[in-house]
Length: 262
Image (cartoon, rainbow, N blue to C red; front, top):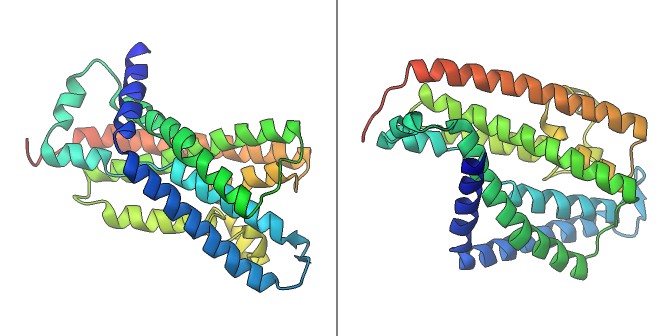
């Protein structure tokens, strides 16, 4: 286990090297949130709420979902890069699970992003725009648990994209499609409150709203405790399904590995 903590530490220290990039990332995310909130402010006009959804709820959704989406950034090209330069063979020889080492590396990067990127972004946007506080202490804890489950879902989806490197030379197109789908169906670009009911029914059968939108609903207290338990069950079921698919792709992918360089 200490080996994987070393991966986390190395990833965290590597991220500390790119301070200017981090500052620019904070600036770009804040600008994106400010512009989005300005557009929604115009759309709301003098209305206090639309379909019982207030402007403050929309702002809170944007700040949290956009901040978390930047913090939970996952490298979809980790395996592809290793295959292309041939160094993935070295990973198979190491006395560690390569997939867990990738997860540990992501944890180190995410820990850095949460401390140095997410918290300043939320603080800056809260000062100039203002977001709603958690609906209660219990909801805050339930929100954190749901966010952890949401990240696992996000990571597993990314893992499946990475596993496709064993069959596809370049996964850029798949990664791009994945990012667009997650951006739309997770509620980070458009709050799912404003989606047509027919579309919402379809989204409910996908894992995407479990990444950001469900945790934010828990944060805001817009769903009951009974519904929250149901959401947890959905998240766990999707984790099991996605993990199984990722594991199957990993086992089959290793058997047909073709190293292109090295």
